[in-house]
Image (tube, rainbow, N blue to C red):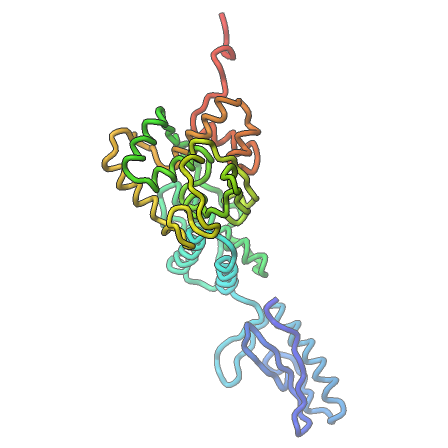
Length: 353
């Protein structure tokens, strides 16, 4: 609720008025005329005015919280006790931007908010306004991403008091499955990268061997994230996508590349600050131009995909894969394997003659 309960002020001449705040702005009323109530505490004897002012407080509070409007004193501005949809969305965005989310996600939310206002700058929103904004994108992935972010903002706005959620019932577009192409010869591609850039090589081998996500989890690693003997990496929930604490073993071929430094130093930059967010994206783009081994649709994430396939093929265990990948449940891991086109059937499972 955006309005506080009104209070009473008694002036030196014994006149009274009620005052209240709406969205941090102070307003006062000496009578109920501006809210359509025939109540004037100052028309009563001095000793009765405070009691009548209490009645005026109750009337003002009820009126405004039911969506009533009144004119600002000697102005034509209409004041409402309830926030507009746009104000609720602003508060929702402000809340999200102060939360512990990645810079990329915060940037996406701000873009979704700005795009909505640019396309449909209104005080209240209906489902058709959201659909009109979504028309900005024909690409399925971009459409779904924008819808996800708008839903996130409106869901938070509802938590903050917004009554209508125009994103309810809106569904994602069905996207065609994309194959995340793994590497056939992991040693060969890693060897090529090693000759190109050491930091990129270390990032790729950590992505493959520890199944960490390259652009944040790997890039932001400090020596303090490793155990003393460099055998494990420990990441708290706010350092990885799953939001849960994660502990992963460090394979011997990764461990032999590491030389422990100061606990608060980033393993790549050697300082307390990590490399910039686009560092590995930029270096990978340069590597793609000179590589003789890279194939279409192979990315930095292909190392994580290749590691996932290797674990599943060796262990046959979805449970182990789930733990290694840091997935929230086995269904996510199964979907992940389907996306990688790992067959869940063997020849012996097929019909026989």
